[in-house]
Image (tube, rainbow, N blue to C red; front, side, top):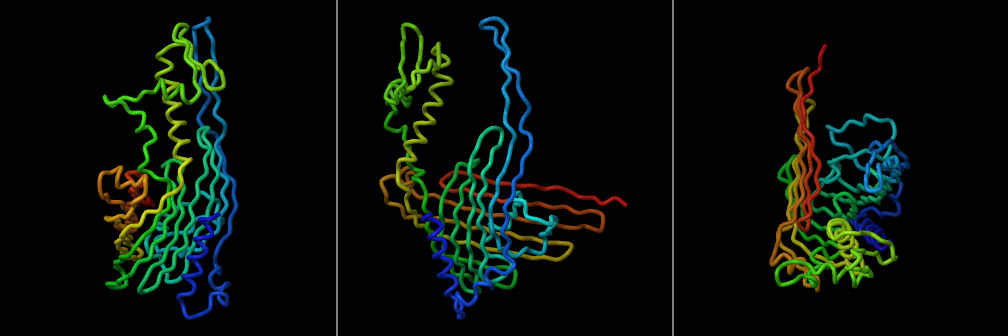
Length: 348
């Protein structure tokens, strides 16, 4: 909730920038915006038979529940020339990579607020992507919140940039960015490391409530459940699960930290019906983060965070065409990206 309030405050500041009163232009800002709610589903991976001969032949069928996606959102983002609206309705599965660009197709206010509750291959998680952006000839204001379960990344970012337009296609920008996130530099296992580089995992497991009967070779969970009857299963199955749960819990106990960064970037957009190029990038080469769990301390110095994207299309003739599309992000040495490329040939 606090993050959404901050985003709304940014929106109010952005709206205050034009000469007109924001309250008198509420309909103007929400004109052509689309609210959508949708549910999508489908079967997951097929059932798997697992065989055991410990007590005679036994067969256990592992079933994975169906996949689904519940989406709720509202968006107002002008489409670029290469973007075709092929569907009549928004169904929550759309992904416009150009949303990651620093500037949009038009000047003014654009926004996206979307929440996706998903289950994929039996794992449930919540994805969120909210951003509000105000672009003018001389400056760019943006607030964004991203939570990606697959990439294991979650942060809130604001940026204020001066914009220099070289021409109608190319512009550069520079300014400051602020990010609110969990302390990614914090390593909960560091205090358990031994001088030889190994982890005293058994002692940690005991501290977490596990019990070990070495003589009987029995290992019990904090709930008293027998989880292993051999050292091999204890080390290869139970311990990794315990370490994952421990690090996740310890990270969640810490407060979020604020990171201040210098940001520079560019945007380039050229479009014709037969050829188009859209490219953008942002780099953060210098950071100020002096907290107890500073990522700079963990990284032993400054680092480079960046993101960018490229969308390219070329219709060689009325039959042949090729395309390349992709985006790449790297924050705190965590990467998440998408790409696709191919060739189309129309036969007649």
